[in-house]
Length: 164
Image (tube, rainbow, N blue to C red; front, top):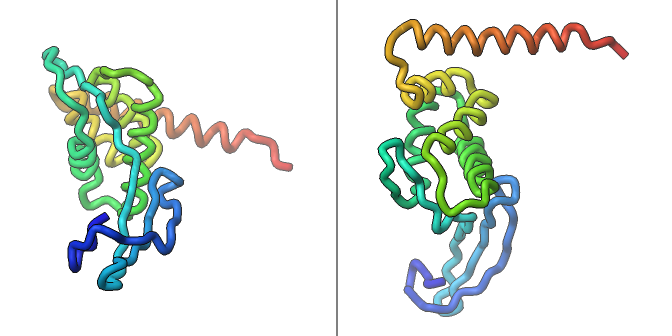
């Protein structure tokens, strides 16, 4: 790793620690030439994955597209940078678990929707409105109704559990 201060080729790692639920490593480094200290961040990267678009085109997987879609969904919503990074890591982990060289963009969308539904229902509805291309207010209302019905069922189940 080159030193960002003097561009010397040799640096040593002085400390390493896992971050983002073990999906990344933060390394503290020191330049052997000038003594400058800096940190690097290593994370898992999805390689050699092609995304098959709705129109049949294939393009390489791009993490930036995932992050941009999530940023739009979470605009003005309470989420920290760390929570956002963990969410993207979980989504990418689920995509990788499919173990395929190619994946349909619709499959990626469903993985994202599953995680958003658990994390933030407003972000979920925002993402769903674009992803599912709601044609009119009725389809939007149907999605909201489905979301609210599931939430009510969960509350009933929690209330029915016997107290210990």
